[in-house]
Image 1 (cartoon, rainbow, N blue to C red):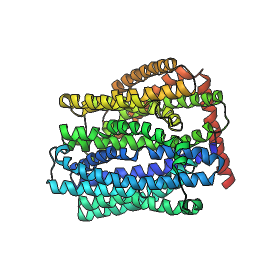
Image 2: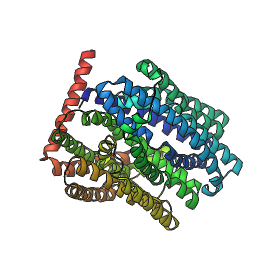
Image 3: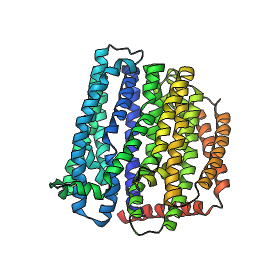
Image 4: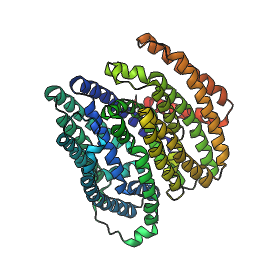
Length: 514
């Protein structure tokens, strides 16, 4: 693995995400000071609508990335140029399709926003602002792909960071002065457009051959097996859009728009913290895996590396899920200044366990993403989509937002199984049953840790001392139990050695700069 590139991408990604997250916290806190939190609910619901409409993308981005890994390894500029040229024109067609779908879908706006505090014309303005931003993104965002596939994601992160800082400062100033949500939203939606335009200009300098015109024939598409890939990945896209893009719609339609905004508080914390401490660290690893898979490394060596990452995923997933369980309620109460922005403790427990499942198998997803062949787990994706809608809608009438989260938890299991069966069973040729049994036992360990941590911290006050005591419990309980389980494990020792090498590499870099 190219540790230097991975480390650089990860460090810059993490720094950028930390600063962005801090700005988001300030932004949302200032927002609730000047405007009602329900406004944020509109944005979340329509965001879910457009994520479902994104199935029109057909998975082209993932498929192009999959083919780019191979061509970047051999520095085949002609084929890289063809792939990116195809990507550009397909995305322009998709923009037109999303426009039509977005216009057709707008008739459902009155039915998916329950208890709206504004008249329907106002909701339509919000809807079309977000639709316009989504459509415009298809004309520019495709150029990001080449940086990610070429293990240079740090370049896009730097651009995103500076753009975010500039736009959010302007946004906060305008919010304080004018207290106008539509102006606030328009400024926010401009962020990605500005960043994508800068990235487009930068790729023209870094990859000048992308400016050339290429001829892409049906033979080029057929020899890469793209049509079957698109057909199979379309099932993935539709299923995952239903799985991940319906929660806010269900909450809005059944529970009310205010609960969408309250749910959004937890989602922002979860997404921000995971991006900082996990996904931004692992995103560069996916490009590294892609380069390794299409090189001449043997599978035994790759399996050893996978097992090492699997150990890391368990340690991180147990820690981060317990962290959310421990700090969610008190953090939101301090952040937004009132207990009125909290959901129930039972919701937090299920949400934290859902976070564990996603984090512990994120590395499986990173491997699965570089292989293509989306036929392998498409049925599992379909089962997941159906489960999520059926369970979430059924339980939402009885349990409210908690019922929706229970549906999300159980619906993730078929997704995870399909990925595990493909990566562990199909690619590596290892026992899926043995792997799942190991993780079932580890999930039992996490449940026990959660019970201990929850019982020890639930009565602690929301004060500086309470935070310190919570942090001590959170730091000690999983560390002691997890190390006792793993200290003799050879993959745990490999992981420790891997981090030692990374720390030494950082130390050497710092010394050389001095």
